[in-house]
Image (tube, rainbow over all chains, first blue to last red; front, side):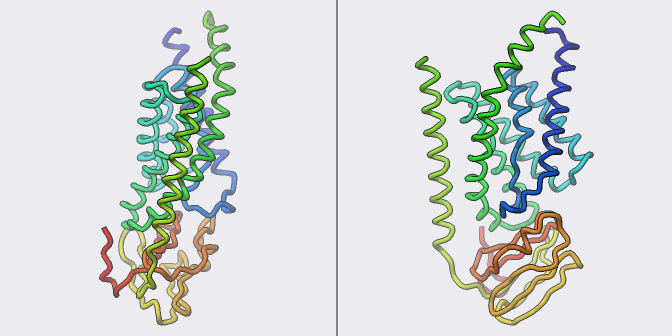
Length: 171
Length: 120
C-alpha cells in the first residue's frame, strides 16, 4: 500500500473515531450512575487501525482523535483523564495483540479496563481524592461489558475491512 | 482450529479473573465502614470547606451545586451539570464515601476526624 493511500485510510479511521466519540457524547448515559462511564465506541476505530496496520498507526489515530475531540466537544480536564486512559489502554492492547494469546474480545476488554485505570489515576490526582478509587470496581465491571461488546463488533467488521483493502489494493 | 479455540478460552479466563478481582475489591472496599465525623468539599482539587457531619447545614458551592447535611447524612441538590449523577446519588455517611460531580470538578467526601483524616 502506498503512502498516500495509507494516509487517506487512517484519516477515515480517525474521522470514524471522532464520529463515534460524538455519538457517545450525544447519548445520555445518566441511567448508569457511575461517574466517568463511557461506551468506548471510538476504541473500535483505534482497534481496527491496530489490527489492519499496526501499533504506530493505532497510536496515530488515537492521538488525533483525542486532540480533535478536545477542540470539538470536550474540556481540558476530560482530555487529561482520556489521555492517561488512552496511553495505558493502547499500551496493553498493543502488548496483548503482539503476544497473540487472546482474541479481539480479550484485547478489547483489557483495553477498556486499563482505560478506566488511567481515568481513575488522573481523577484521583487532579481531584485530590484517593477515595475515588472506590468507583474503580464498578468501572471495571462496566468496562468488561462494553469492552466485550466492542470486541465482538471488531471481530465481525475486521474481515470485511481487510478483504476490502486487499481487493482495492490497486487503487 | 486449535489456536483459535485456545484464544477464546484465554479470553473467557481473562474476563472471569478481571470480574473476580473487581468483585473482591468491591467487597473489601465496602467491609471497612465506620461512621464519619465531618464532610470535606473539594473543588478543583483544593479544599473548599470542611463541615461537621452532625450539624444540619446547607452549603452553596460557588453556585455550582448545593450540599445538604441532614441527620448525619450528606446529599447534593440543584447541580448545574449535564448528567446529574451527583444529585441522584443516595445520601452518604460513612468514612471514605464520596459523591463526585465530574463536570463541576467537585468531590464531597466523608472523613473521620475533623479534617485530620489523611488516607494514603
